[in-house]
Amino acid sequence: MIIVRYGEIAVKGGKRREFERKLAGNIEKALKRRGIEGRAEVIKGRILVDAPDNASEIIAKVPGVVSVSPAKVMPYEEVPKYLKEALKGLTPRSFKVETQRLDKTFLKTSVEVNKEIGAFVVKEFGWKVDLENPELTIGIEIINGKAYVFFEKIRGVGGLPVGTQGKVVVLLSGGIDSPVAAFLMLKRGAEVIAVHFDQGKNARKVVEKVVEILNDYSPEPIELIVENHFEILKPYVIALNKLNRREWTCVVCKVAMLRRAAEIAKENGALGIVTGDSLGQVASQTLTNLYFETMSVDFPVHRPLLGFDKEEIVSIARKIKTYDAFLEYPYCDCPFRPERVVTQGKLEEFEKIRAELKKEGVI
Ligand code: ATP
Ligand code: MG
Image (tube, rainbow, N blue to C red):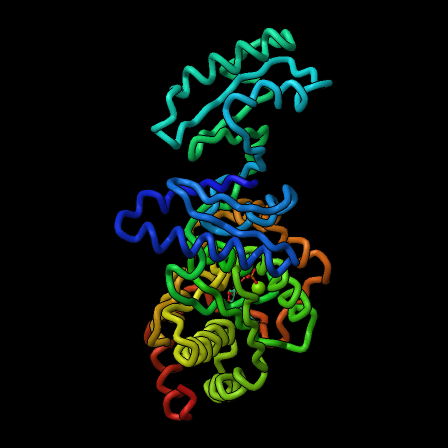
């Protein structure tokens, strides 16, 4: 039996039941996709999953899950006998017993259980008790009159169950940042549709791999929509060339992507566009440019990494493994990038460009 703990959703008041059901359903889906049949049952404050122990790692990646423990279930009286066997041969420097009584009808308190089982272990094995920093923690949760005994707590990704917050379109570039932005949205419970503008280069392979990796955090496989970058950008580039304003290419390129993404979002019932922009990270991601880009699309654009440092982003990318996909293919630069990229453009100039784009029927 696997004990699943969830935090945030427990405090969500009226929404709680819906959240719990969603989380249990998402856990079952995640297991099923990997050929594991497991039933997830919502009980007060926990989800119990009847699945083999190796399902724990899969469950830990389901957004909404705070921690996971593979446990053995038994009547409370049998705990000493079980521990005598289970702990045989171990030689921890110290230990403690940590009990939680979810079932308040159980006659002993958690403190009483800690003392009773702790005393048994000391007598049986002679180990030292350390409540602060024990090498081994014997976890006991009392659920429906039974004792669930476990020795590890695998950390989950936390957040909210996917499917409780609606849908977003995430622009995946093949770089390090946008996969992290996608992960953060999944973690906060949003369903994700991935959109990539293909330049016929390695980036597409990275994105395909990234989607595969991100699927670990999504109950349904993520849909990847691939658009032809050249086709989308062409009319914009023609208009810019007419004005002899090639340094605006990067800003205008993002405008083109966002506008196409907005169409896709509307077609798919998504309520926002998400990018991996981080303020000032590269010359093109200035507040001025983000202003122009956002003002050119009639749709909400979210940038969950705006306040993150590169190291913070890389560290998440490593943890969730999307960094591996990036490393697998060499980086390729955009063929349209001009020698000089505008960073602090003037509003009047941008308005001129917009007017030209409108005149040409591009926007
Ligand atoms: P990333 O690491 O995600 O590539 P970046 O720092 O390289 O980000 P840019 O290349 O300036 O940033 O792009 C900013 C954002 O625009 C990206 O995070 C991504 O969301 C989106 N984007 C850029 N290029 C593409 C593309 N070819 N297809 C889809 N989205 C893109
Ligand atoms: Mg990039």
